[in-house]
Length: 248
Image (cartoon, rainbow, N blue to C red; front, side, top):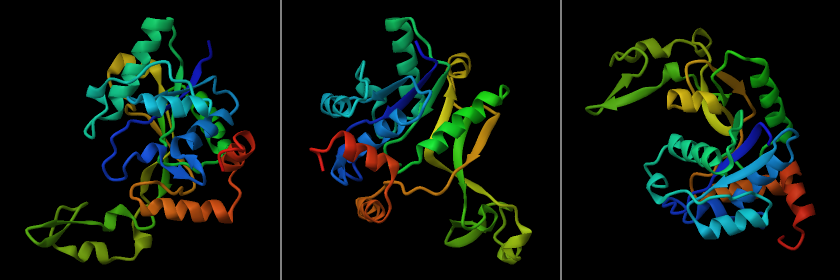
């Protein structure tokens, strides 16, 4: 079997946006975009959706995602982290198919509009960095984190210095280092590292810089994504229109 699989987490029970992962965007369920993105990347051998819902599984299969198992409810809660569903998938593949991929391409449905070529380049990047424990996509923050605050007892406190004297952050932004925010564009995980260390990313994580991509957190985000789809011909949306024309 192939060495690279895409894994798409799509649990049910979202509270912020009900059934967020299957909510229509441009006429297609949200998780269909991540399935399509994976199928457009050369070198990805399988596209597996990890879900706890039979309804979600049926939708994933309709859009050519593979759903060989249902994820247990105990690792599909609001408080559940990524390690649980990744370890479950690896254990299932090993036990049921005697198969372990080398890389997992983690694609979150909440970042639907990606460029497949960027995912392709990320795979090439981690393959060339043998010492890396994983890869995480990031984008540069519009304002450096060195200038950010907490509120403690009603007063501002500098996160970096831990002081309530805020004069230090008033210096010109050019005097501070750039900082980066993890996003959901593409993360790449080494199966062997997860199984040997019981964690996902490790201490040699490639910071893979990508363009900013709109993510879904609240219902209004769908409005902005609909606007983006209308004004630019994203390759994933084009793929869905061409391969599932009855849906639009």
